[in-house]
Length: 295
Image 1 (cartoon, helix red, strand yellow):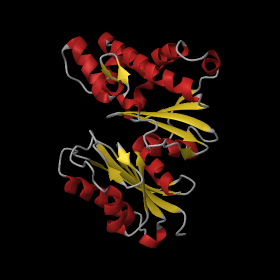
Image 2 (cartoon, one colour):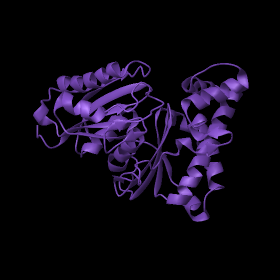
Image 3 (tube, helix red, strand yellow):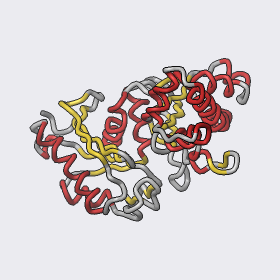
């Protein structure tokens, strides 16, 4: 194997850690590896899971350190990308101000590149997935939280303080947008309508089976996503909008309400050319995008 065309990518979220090895053309090497984050446990235990995930990918694919150009970390944020720190992170509450990049560099003696998980995922999509060939990509990730990324000419737009795209905290109704546009938000709305607790995945199944309350939840979810996208599209005028994350699997349940609300809220010309697509890299999008940070 050439030592200049392989990267290991690691997607670090509040729910799962997933790792894989990737060639510079975006193709995968062997199988990926996934483990639960157990985000409320100690930072030492979480770090050990990340290190173990990388080690397993190296071992199971029979790679040597000389085969690998670097390691990319796509991590739930907020982050200090320049310093390689996790900041005060709601989805990783025990890892506030943790120097993740330097710890992984010490463990493997390889260059390590780190960015927000949404930024990394959408960088991968812009290079090898749904946004391939597009000059401007607006990407959102829907899952444990609500992420957003801006990719211009296949480069992540970070902003002056490295927080471009952090729209999760933007005001919405009496709170902020992530309280609605997230897995927890879906569950909370369903419980408010029915008094029953259910995961977003369960609520998707209920909607498919015809549960009217579940259908209403997804319609309202689509409208909330449209609210966030409307401001972003009017500001950026992107060539394409990509929706990824675990909840994107439920897109057929909320796409129509999203689309209908969005075309009413954006400028006429973008509305006529609106292109909203699901991320193409699937369950692998997170670690493939993290590997893209290396290349």
